[in-house]
Image (tube, rainbow, N blue to C red; front, side, top):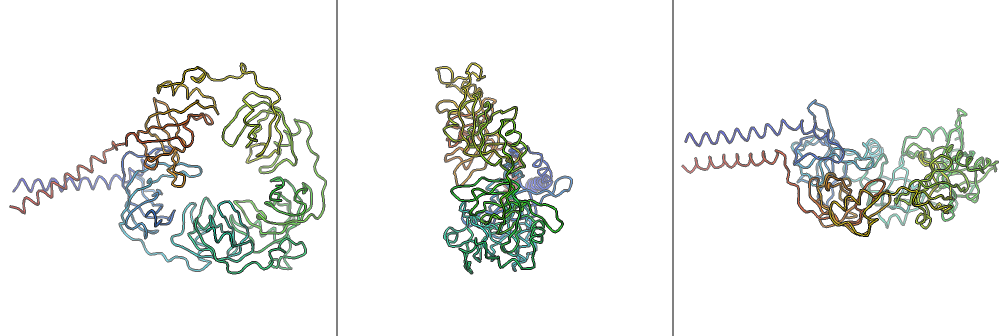
Length: 604
């Protein structure tokens, strides 16, 4: 009997010990998580308890998951936010802000584009510890707008909402519609295709769906629906110069409109259509012969007399093909603040009030380069120019070519395909196209062409020695690695190769829509990128797994990688080596021991 009691006591103590260690380790887990380098994961499955701070992606009834942010504590007692990505559990459909939940899964440092966060990876699970105080959802238009524009970046309102407003623009790409509600601009992303086809600019519509803040833009998420409340009365007359917009009061001056426009917050719009007169100060996008539109910057003045720049985005008019710098124009349309830029939205119309004297065009190579480098960000040099220089780099992505002209680097973006295929590093070429300052980079914009003036002497162009130069194709792992890491940027190994190694980082999570995943894996002490690889095992790849990739090997911008759509299979799944599994087994043994002890005692 004493032996049984002792066994039971030991089992209870062991369980208590395990539970105490787990609870005490949560702060240490948080510390370790926030020390992870980009792409790294903590070994083994971890459990953390926290309070739901925000809903990131609403519950998906098809996949039975939800994405939330939870607040947890580190060892210093500070609040830290961890995302629980596509979390699953019995309460997934009802979990809400303020709930206390316990989440279990793989914790990683995820970086992709502008996303940099610590998260529980997909398929993590949770249980609800305590429901938070029930929050009353916003009901009125004013409450819904206030809640939507108060959202943290990349979070969503829980539930489905409806808002009514006026359509200000339509964009066929991803069936996007902008409409104004209570003076705020709302994007409807990937609107239901049937609804999208029916509505037009100026229509009054009611949109229903999930509302989120995506990278700073408040929008109805994919799949939203729209009902037309009232069709626009006079669609044909919207561009007539003689009709004054009814929404612009007679006593509202243009200076008043300018002041109001520059007081807008990001994403906000002025109510109704407005008209402003200004002088074109710069060209943003050249005239598009297909769409019959052009983008310009123009100078306007507020009540303080100070000049301000407002952009006229893809505006249309009889003079769209010939409008130029220093012309005085009158523009009519919707004015909004787009990510900090005050602009007339797409579809605005204009008339020329007075032709100005265009600035002198640069004629010499040095003058053209100087003028291009003097451009404000986002503006183009009016007209078409030709520059001659030497190719310094050739990149496969977007047919990009870099060349040096008069000691300055010029990027050729999306060079015409035939021209791109003919030029090589070291060639002397003449490039013709439109020059632009794109976010600080001086470049020839998409569609530029090149003529080879002089081919480079192969003996003078330093090319790495690779196994490709020999007649024999590399076959062993060592030979393939040597050949791959001897490739110059933009080069590729001829043929298809297979390499097997251990996954060290998930670069891009598995994309359900495209059926691919991007990872880094280590082979023979070298790290290789597997770019958007596909296969039945692709959704299940995790850090630590041993994988085999088969496909074309390239050097893309200095990175050795398997090219898109290479095949991947998991050779061996990673077995967590952390102490967590040992503790878990230990706890199970203890529970079984306790159960056995009780059962034996009862039998006696």
